[in-house]
Image: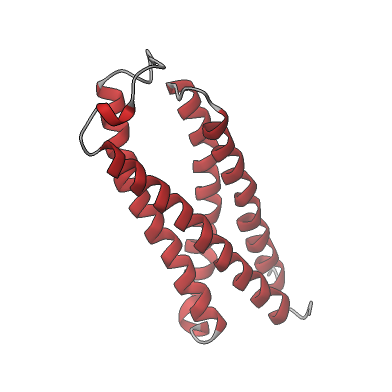
Length: 160
């Protein structure tokens, strides 16, 4: 049987590896002059991979152990992690609507650089704000949860 510390280290590594994937995915969108379908799918490959790594660890490693560890730093870690996912859900409420409008207008296949996204729908600026707030919130709470989780790992397994 694999030791608990080894499994915890593997979980910590997988969660840590997800962050550079988020950064790379974000950079692809930030660096793109126009977000085409190719740019969007390239961006999503990194983001989805990061989310899968992180969520798999949450579901397979963290959730089953939560009931036996719920207290103090573990509770804080869980609350911060849940808040990160809540912010991600908030972001998705914006991105889904933006995606639908851009797809309807065929801006992914035939981008027109002069088209203002704000003119495509009266709620577009609101949806874009939701997306930005949600993504920024996810990253902020993800980092806070990661810091608490790493501190717990280092203390629990005697590295500090």
